[in-house]
Amino acid sequence: MKLKLCIIICILAAAVTIYYISLEEYLISAGSRIVFKLLLLAVFLSSKKVQNKPIFYSFFGCLLLTDILSFFIGVIPYVLIAMELMFFIGYLLLLKDSFRQYKIRDVRNVVAIYYFFVIAINAVLMVYHLYNLYNYMEETPLIYMGQVFYNIALYLMVINALAYYLNSYSKKSMFFLIGSLAFVCSDILVSAYYFYDIKEDLMLIHTVLSMIGYLFFFNYFFNPEEPQMIEDEILEELRERKAKSKLKVKPKLP
Image 1 (tube, rainbow, N blue to C red):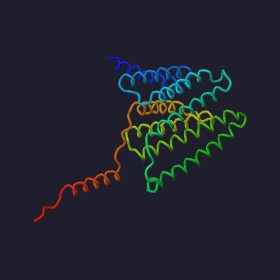
Image 2 (spheres, rainbow, N blue to C red):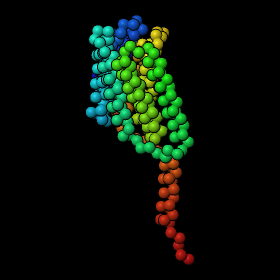
Image 3 (cartoon, helix red, strand yellow):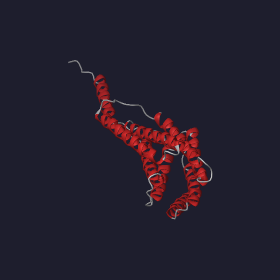
Image 4 (cartoon, helix red, strand yellow):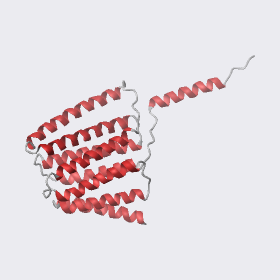
């Protein structure tokens, strides 16, 4: 009963956040985002076990601090730098935890070639984005440097998420990949809102994508790593079984 109540209140908190974002009431929406995250934590803790408590609670603390700091945007100087720092630390924590979940397989296969191609394209796009961003932030070099580190961490997280999924194919790696992509799309939208002066309901979509990212990252932290067997491993196991069966069956002498 308590779990169902938490889920219902969590959904209501998400709806309230989206509603006030649509009205551009950002202070109220920041408060409802905090409630949403705390209730989401309660839902997962009541049904599953955290796989890596130190990393998860540090990551969750960074998320909460960003929402608390958002109350002071325009009030305290350089609060955006502090928020970027919290996100940067959060992404580094995700990188640290996810990187130990998998091992790199054969880098000579076709999938790996496409993977490195995607890395190169994303690197070019990130550099182009930071170059354009500099034109909007020449007078605030500290905030711009924060954006540089923030975008590099985000880029590394997405690249790592792809590597993780391609070398594991597990449910946990899928959660991490979808959460990373949701955060990237969310960041693109918030950059367009703040720095490129595009206002068409971007904060609403940004908030929805962020919540989707939170949901998948929570699932990532609350699910154990269970890598699925890939085709090469299945064939190798079949060959081993065939070899063992030949050793067991000895021909009878006439």
